[in-house]
Length: 91
Image 1 (tube, rainbow, N blue to C red):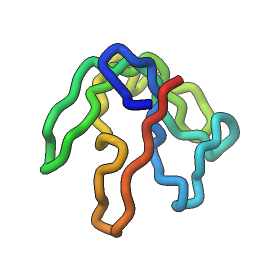
Image 2 (tube, helix red, strand yellow; image 1 turned 90 degrees about the horizontal axis):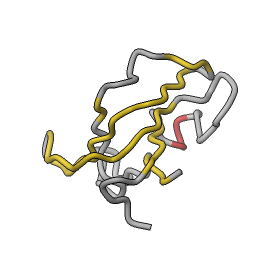
Image 3 (cartoon, rainbow, N blue to C red; image 1 turned 180 degrees about the vertical axis):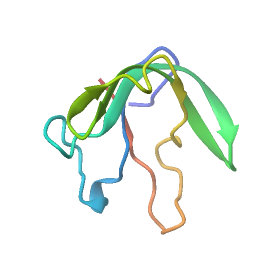
Image 4 (tube, helix red, strand yellow; image 1 turned 135 degrees about the horizontal axis):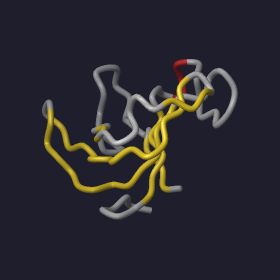
């Protein structure tokens, strides 16, 4: 499914292959949830604009990113290590 404006999404802080995976609980759970409010071209690539309403880091509910906009690269964006991004999913 293509992610569109208005979708509720979860954006993971780390790639799956860096040892964190996609845990939703426990000390390796690191992600934000919120609504896609637009797209931007930042630092040479297309990015989601997500208004955060939930912030989980190290398995604990946080509030430091709640109410802020995060801008992860759009899924499929090439990285410096010849990978492609896939950090954002519809919830």
